[in-house]
Length: 70
Image (cartoon, rainbow, N blue to C red; front, side):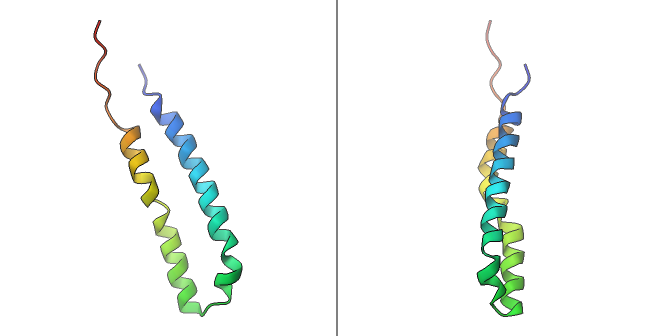
């Protein structure tokens, strides 16, 4: 049987990315008033840190279920 976790995990990832993009985008006004080097650091961190909360989701999605016994 196919792993039903993968489609569910895909939807959860998509939802997380939408929330994250809206959150970072909503900070563009205040961040835009900061010096250029601070903006660069902020957007580099924002571009990398989105993946960290997804690490447990990847582990759950790829977990192998024990075979069913007849």
